[in-house]
Amino acid sequence: MASTTDTNSPTNQGIKTLRILCFGDSLTAGYSGYGYFHYPYAAQLRKRLKEDMPDTEAMIDVAGLSGDRVIAGQYMRRIKGSCEKAQDVPYDWIMVLGGTNDLGWGESPDHIYEGLKKVWRLALDTGANVLAMSVLEGEHTSGDIVKRRKELNNRIAYHEEDRLCALVHHEYDNEGDDLG
Image (tube, rainbow, N blue to C red):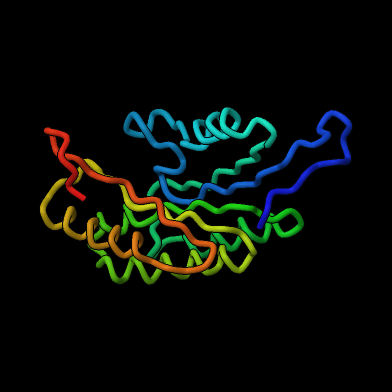
């Protein structure tokens, strides 16, 4: 879906509008400082888009819920609700970050991946492009959770579907070597 141009307002003549939904769990909500502060990445995204695309107004909605899970959580209900609210003016992009809490609760990468595919499908069915984001490295560094996170991120990275792009975060060790 291409961005639209708002020609109704004389002050916005020629300005394109890019509608984005940032959807996910606490990381999308901007969880930081052990929950005392919330700084959603959407603020930095908006700033960078303004710098890189000065003729485009980015309208970004944030739907992050701390503790939510793809499996046994509210992801499907919430993505449906967010998409239904935007039916009249749909999103151009829906960015999905999920699986962090599921990994923490011991869910298998396969099970999480199947759940994410359902979320992505619902988002794609609205006509939006989807940016599927990999699970970030967290404070849990036990061998099992690291292994499962890498397995899930590998599935996300190699998922192929029209209008879906994967954003894969690379992990580095203390010497700066790629652990990818």
